[in-house]
Length: 399
Image 1 (tube, helix red, strand yellow):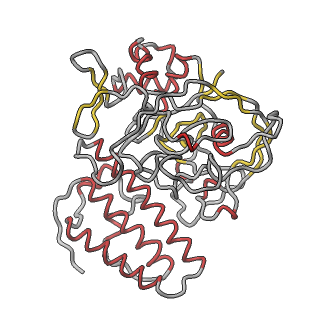
Image 2 (cartoon, helix red, strand yellow):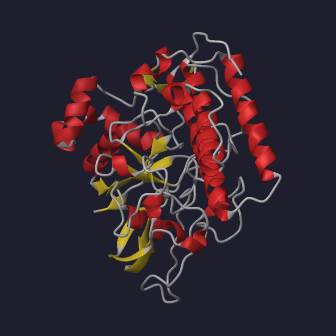
Image 3 (cartoon, helix red, strand yellow):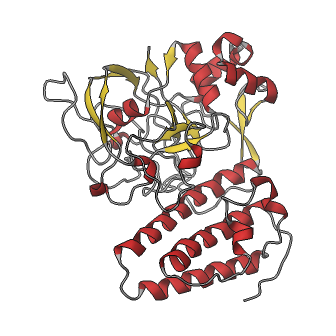
């Protein structure tokens, strides 16, 4: 196959990379086949190709890229028509989840690049649902943090489950809303040094940040925000989104709050109290609401809606402690550094977690554009604290 070469838009690299990842780990690694495109590793191996140079490579054009994806899929289907052992199955599972991540990345890239919004991917009728401003009390106790082999496919940074002691704490029922974050902006919080960490202040000064990246003031003084190509009035009861860890941390300092640790977040999400409510019960739920699969009334996942819904929505998805939207709507920053668990050992895709330990913060819960395969409560997402281009917000704990 000899695909044509052309100048392509930035998103085309992402699409080609998804096909390459499938081919590399399933057809080549699991089944020993030769590359379909001789130079494919030089084009699409994200571990070897510098981010800034990806858009200048001699990439196949749109038709050639989709021809490549179709060829990979057809060969996978041929293989899956016969027996596939558990070792090979792992790599198909890995490739599917990697594709899930890039579907989400392509969605927020449309926002970054001011492209037209995606169509046909979610219900535009986002419900009016209000807000839930209270905290709930979470009892302390021993908690099993991380995943086990019985949980099915898990990423290496979730391995393996281990016990950790969690002290009692109070946590907000919902993520911080646009209105709550706007109060910080209007109070001059971005210019108040005392609310920012040293690294956060350095980022703010370097970027000249005075508000979240897509916010804009309208002529009547009401906050608006760019949503893809359009400027829309900020929905006051929707969760704040496209804020980075530095901004979340600064809001917490201003409000006299703090971000939860990843253990506190997970306890709130799938933990259960004992009958008398004095401590954490042994075991946990699969999802905040129980073991039933996600639905649009439980979680805004899998493009159930075409963007974040108000923080009071999805009432059927409350956790055992009464917290809402622990899963879906917006990713939630935690206070935790992205570090390996005690018994960590890298999976065959060694560049997934290991190179990034100690340089990123943990996010959990997924967003409206996240697949349910990724938005499992134990899944540990991770971004550098300056990233404000992803569908991320935060909820907070009392000091």
